[in-house]
Image 1 (cartoon, one colour):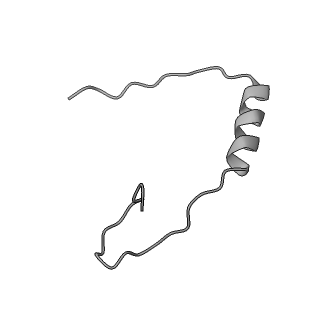
Image 2 (tube, helix red, strand yellow; image 1 turned 30 degrees about the horizontal axis):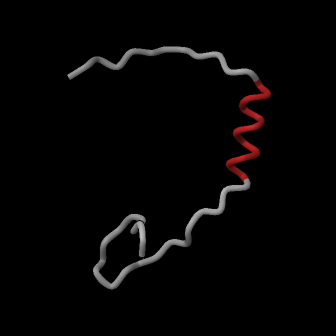
Length: 45
């Protein structure tokens, strides 16, 4: 198994601000509990 190593990245504040704005506008699907008891998002249903 690979060792976990610390790393750093630099991202411009403008890029992070844009990402935050786009994520805040995301329309997420409602949670559901199907009769089968399966969990997760069911594509195409």
